[in-house]
Image (tube, rainbow, N blue to C red; front, side, top):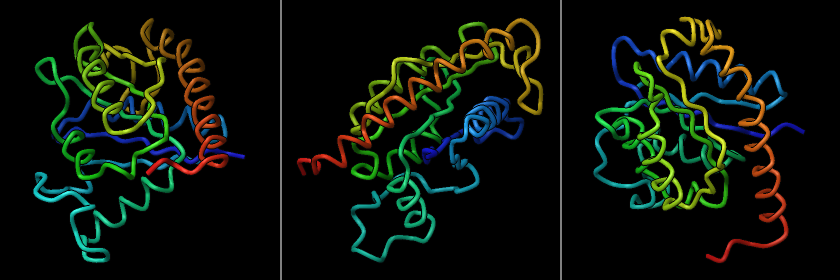
Length: 196
């Protein structure tokens, strides 16, 4: 049985390089039989956070927020594809994530980071780890870091060069760890109701 995984991406730039990594992750998970849905923060276009989803009276949240809440609740796990902006988190993806809280609880999240340079978005990945943990997700220890992204993935998200070969070698462990935590969380949620 396949797992329902949301791949979340947050760049608002006109020339988005990280979409290459998002496509690579989506294709890789689908090739393993997973049910993957792409969540593009730019396409959803939520305003800067004024009111969280839970702060709207039931049934009165704006349609994009209501739809996304259902997608998050229906997911078994998440992959956050993030670039690094000045040693930190992408604002578009962070804004989308912050609109929700309880919807994320008791499911695993994996982080795939990228940058134009050689550090592969590692500082953003580190910042995301604490943020996602605070929001009630179990963050898997395996990560993917891609950089320089233009020399690692083609415009279609296909691995190229030595960086692409390294990415292909690291992906199975990344996907295996996410799948393990998804199954563990599913079993625990089926066995015992969340404490609140």
